[in-house]
Image 1 (cartoon, rainbow, N blue to C red):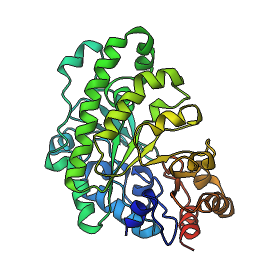
Image 2: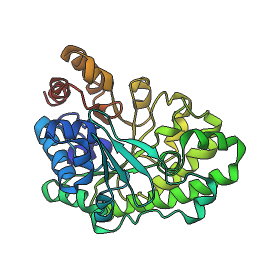
Image 3: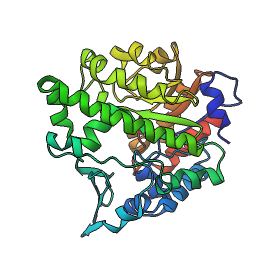
Length: 336
């Protein structure tokens, strides 16, 4: 299992279009029957839930998706429960809240003021506990894909507040570039640690660089150079690269990153991207949650009929309330 994904990305012939929905904590914990905070706090349950979801649906990959890897013993010891909510403070200072029926939410960034940047303590991704979930997945599966946030997104979510960060693109470029340099170092190390552990590919995400938030000129100035450096650092494995929203104005720029495959959402005509590169997508997550099996089948067939250089997937993260029968329908379309 799994080599079919690498074959598709590499342009080789495959016996069916591989299917690899973007299933992370919300839906994987749902089908595995555990709470989202259990999934994140227990490295074994995280791995087991990913393996179970892959087996349950029969799709073609396993995804070690956490942008910080596994949770350490010290982080687990400092967890705070407030009613039904769980607050996890990462070593770097970022606080995450887990609530019933909701995806994880960042409620405090690592930096609460700019002058803290020189004392920022980013985690070491090479320690055993950070790589434990990936290692456990690899004990059961030959092909596991790792994950890395791109520096622009990591800087503007985990390290610093997004709204303030976007304002500083105009008000304080020196701080922005300094923060991006710090984020780049961590994102490279995080990806490199997964590759050394045995990840066969890396899925790079940069949702904060969406054209809904960032103009194409600002994208080229602040996000693209860091995407290029990050992806170059992972050159020995295939890289799948995702930006949310309508990437049409920056598509040619994204192609300069060296990514082997572009993951796109439903706001983009997949045929336009497929003309230029391998494409990964793009069944709407909302369709998986609210649509009928007929609608999911039609959307999936539109992707599968492209044939070569394509991986059938969700356009973005599969929501926790996605219908089981809809995800099964995606798989059925792919392998029939």
